[in-house]
Image 1: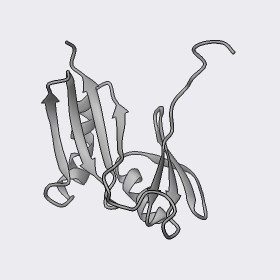
Image 2: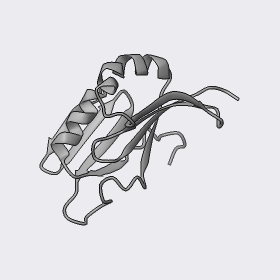
Image 3: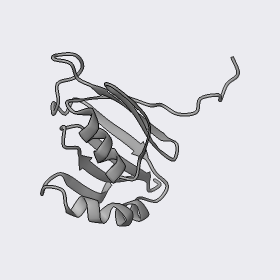
Length: 126
């Protein structure tokens, strides 16, 4: 196998409501490219996420915060300005940043309605 053939990683996020999760990602500028029954694939540029409907205890329980999804971006400030109207409408405490972190990243943290944490990050050198 040739080296360097990787394109992206697309994590599965287990969600309690597939339609609500797809709508949430769409509000953040993602496009739903495929949705069928209990599965949806959303993507923005090269960041893809696979959403999977929970069935009872199948998958991670919603809101357990064991998982955070990190999406590296080129310009965190431009993304923040684009998403600001959506973020401002979210419950207080569901959005943090953008903020510089001691590990040389500037991050915008967004808590999805299902309890999963999305972190958008930009390297700030170091």
